[in-house]
Length: 256
Image (cartoon, rainbow, N blue to C red):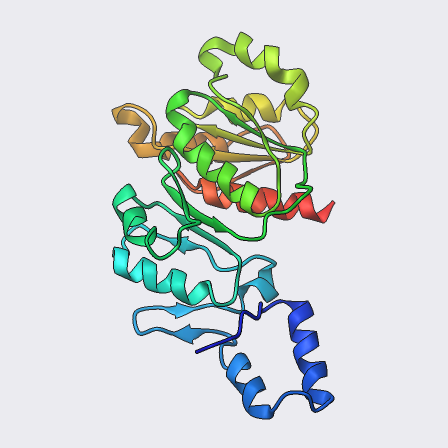
């Protein structure tokens, strides 16, 4: 279906309806575009073109469990109606499948994400800090970073400042305290989130990771520690869910 490059957002929808009211486009043309609301069925996936109207950002593709061909099909469908595409939890092999069709696609080896951003924001919002306990937590932190960036933020990062060497955190604390929202990414026992949460007066989004030895239970120990934190003003997302943290941070920042 050819949308003629139209973008499904509130401004475009208003323009479309005004054009129809003025008799400048036919009812068939309107039907053609609105038939994508709320989704487009491409057999294996119902692509949600209406997501940006409801949420302010297009549908994001969770790549794990999908075949390269399925991901390519979804990207092709989304690219008809949006300039911003994010795919999470994908391998380089998937990127090689996508690249011939989308030359402006970018792959991040650490975060395991694919991004296509044809409409970057000239003045991204500052005020988000992303903090990790260790270097091993960086894949999840970078997923949060890339999510926040494509949603219009310009985050600062502070990697490897965990409680095993708390002087590292204390030395960066003045910069961290300038943030409006803080994402804390930690595995093992997940203590860093509580420590940061007790030292700042802004929302903290805690992200447990699956980093750790046997009794960490692939991130469950960190998750339970964060959920039971006595530091107020902290919310917790699922294990390894950097995307969820970045998305939530962007929503909070845009609400200021």
